[in-house]
Length: 365
Image 1: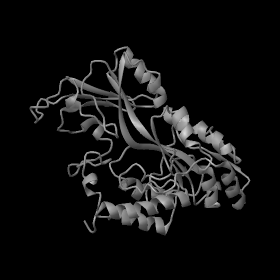
Image 2 (image 1 turned 45 degrees about the vertical axis):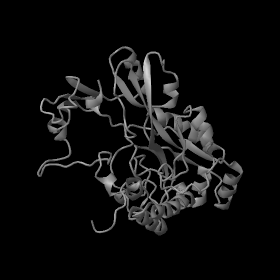
Image 3 (image 1 turned 90 degrees about the vertical axis):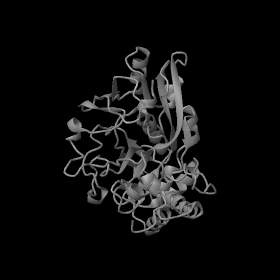
Image 4 (image 1 turned 120 degrees about the vertical axis):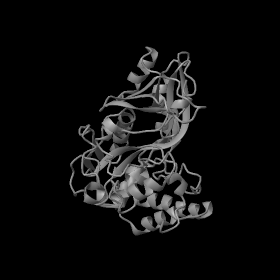
């Protein structure tokens, strides 16, 4: 390492997104669909893109105290949470994870167990700051963020399954400075900001894709923004949202309705053990996932200060700067952080996920 890295233990832990040690000469791409290796309790057998991956018991698994209990493990992709839950009731599925509070509230608890785990996973709304209607003035983005009744959405729509977000990724972590004021709905203040920015409103596409939680947030966003004259078009939501370019630094100043080339979008972010990846890839000026295309030297400096902090106290000082700059610049809206809820068939023991949705297959029986 060339400098101190306060979150180094996280970067080499199992919850680090995308951390793989690949054999020299191997590809981490398409070849893994047929040749994925592994040394865990279950090993790869087959993969059908967009449908399922099948694993078989590893007869050579090294830990004799944690031998796999099943001959096969199958992970299946579902577009609908309720469709997955229905298959648990019919006996075709043993468990599903990542269901919303609204879906969980409708589940018959006599037939299905619910397992809840706190998470920092969230849906992030980006407002592009270098092109399009949100780039005119940061006060337009601030106004948009002030229209949301976050607590009402969390309680009424999500049935309390989560925690209120404050448009930054720092709040759920222990190093967050709790003195930073929570942003709340204030239409009068939002209208003043719009007027000060010289905006009477505009129409803008929402770029994203269909998923249960996104389909709940999108109409809430539309109705909220309508109160200050922003007409959010939901007609461009498409499965092509995640389309190249894959690096914000190469994205063009155009509305293509793709993730990194859209004026406004909703992107899902899974749980992380530390905020380092969010900060460097989403909030930093040169971040490859910087969908808002925010570029701010003070924010970059605060991120670097946080990532190199060697004590919790130093990290909290840097965190406060990031929290306050996130509110001031308002490149992103994070209305809430999720609780990861899993639905598990009665009788299945040991099924437990972490905030990312990872589970210990060897412990399940």
